[in-house]
Length: 418
Image 1 (cartoon, rainbow, N blue to C red):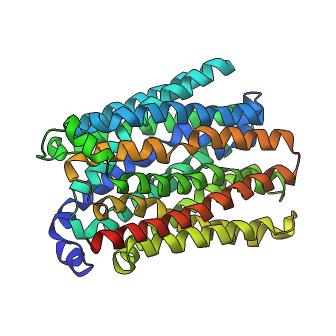
Image 2 (cartoon, rainbow, N blue to C red):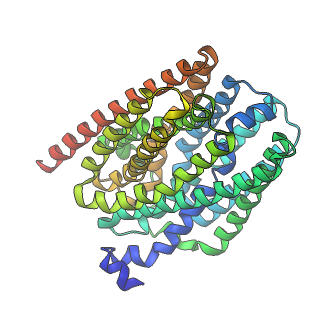
Image 3 (cartoon, rainbow, N blue to C red):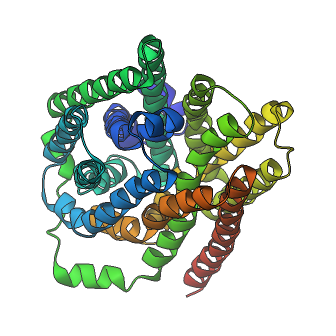
């Protein structure tokens, strides 16, 4: 296996730790099943819990608010404590929250649950994942390493969501509420099991033998322009993360697809993450991070505009699926490669999790306002009009993302000429 990986261009450190990277990746996918599954079953979830579109959007905003607070401090925590412990506690805690979801919760209680998930799944967990991938790979393999991490997340998410579709369909004959309960149980069990597996699979010394994180070092980190440019690239790309969930209800409500078919498309897209993440990693290591990000933003914007100009009818189903999946492939290229920017930006490896926490605090801000904005747009504009507003805002964010990448390329060129 090591010989094959060497032929594929992997350095010795990356090849040695590839399995560990994949294990971290699977945990990084499974933990988000519970906080975000509602989007794949949007119509059924709304009906099962008697919610409005605005209330659905508020769940996402609650996750975003508590996630932002978590990232701000979680990165420092992840640089000082065991990655194995962080992964295990986060996964098991999130899974236990799923069983709480089975109770007859009111809307305020659901808000409290999503706030808890905002902490359990985002606090130190995500920064710890980012640091783990970076220190487990060679400097020249950052694109491939993050590509395999995100590709592994995509495959895990695809397998997980296909199982959820089966669980929902199995009980849907009774009613949507029975189907939703089955999905929740399914996600809760596999999340807890992944937490147990992480404890026995991830090495305790994954923290690496780095220097202790200091306030002086954090201050120096905050003065690095690369941190803020990466944050804005992540911000605009994460706008797609939030708004792409509304392509599924668009396909069911406007184009007439069934709820099960819409959920199947939403789960099938995740298989393409392997092409976007892994293929994008190899591609990026050849063409450069800046070029890869720029092309991806342009393609994503063009595909979104293409969907907007399609007639809102069942005959647009096939071209809609093609354009949506095309945008999703390049989104996955961007999602993985934005983290590879840390190496190019000269961010010290011992501050990887702290940097990831800062970047995530800024970059994931769309999670606070995008869901509520989208829910309000759908609430105030019936039919196609609400979705067109959502897609318009998404297109603007993608164009701004491309402009930010141009700023990044200019920054790197300036640094090289010093």
